[in-house]
Image: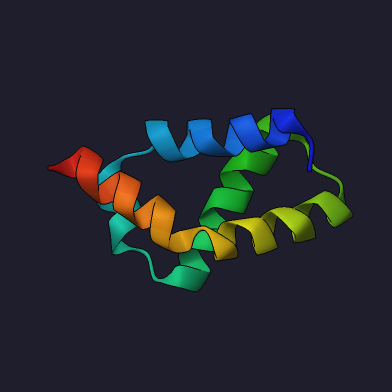
Length: 71
C-alpha cells in the first residue's frame, strides 16, 4: 500500500462523522472505509484487498480513535 493511500484512509477516518463509524459492525466498517478511500484514491483491485486487510487489522485502533474524538 502506498503512503498516499494510507494517508487517504486515515484522513477518511479523521474526517468522518464519529457516530456513523461507531454504529457500523466490523465488516460494514471495513467496507465503508474502503469505499470512501476508493472514491478519493481510485484503487486497483489488489490495493483494495490489501487495504481491507490493513483496516481489519487496525479496527480496534480506528474504533478507539473515533470514540475518543466523539467524547
